[in-house]
Length: 240
Ligand code: SAM
Image 1 (tube, rainbow, N blue to C red):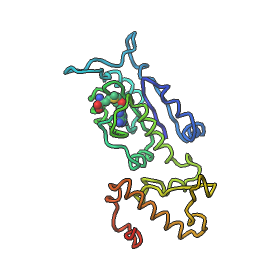
Image 2: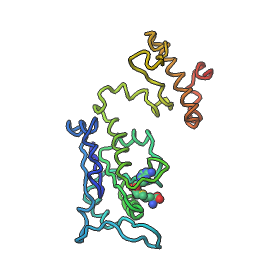
Image 3: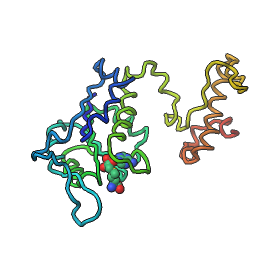
Image 4: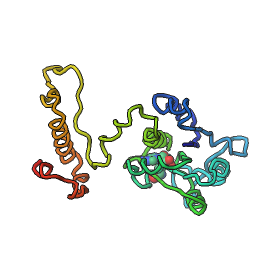
């Protein structure tokens, strides 16, 4: 997969050289390129913003600068992702769909955001999705780009060493949060690991994990429980 990120702060994306995403870049599983938007400016001051039409506080990113950048970076078939607090809430379903794509381009806004005509223009040429990573406002799209790139890249075949670790995760196919996890030592600070996990009894462990995942999801995210398909629940689930 190829991912391009365009930002006025390319150094903000430096963590993409680390850990599993960094390794995926080194091994060629992920072709990730970070660009400085100012490379597409034409004036001495490398200006990317201007005052908002209609008045008001702050500055807006200019469509002409973004247009030159995106015309160069967006290749045929690429999917443009525009992080914005007014976008669709980003979920694991988006990550799964985006992981199937060949080429993603992320346009990181700053200030009051990018002139609205940019998303409109590219929507008439190809796929554009405006995504929000949560109901809060950040200073720029770089952190959102890091979130999207990491959530997508870890789903690419070969990026996470053991693909089994992706199966039972929170927000996966079961629609539940993950069960609590434990490791050695079996007693720490007077707190014991649940006996069933030390029993070696695989069926009981699986049942305990399902039960605790259901309880945890009901307590923390009742909206996810409400969205479960009743056909996916068994008799024991209904007792939990
Ligand atoms: N004036 C905008 C609004 O109220 O919707 C906020 C602009 S914000 C200060 C600047 C940039 O940060 C946005 O263009 C976007 O790229 C990014 N950003 C901020 N919060 C975000 C969020 N929750 N999700 C995704 N991107 C976000």
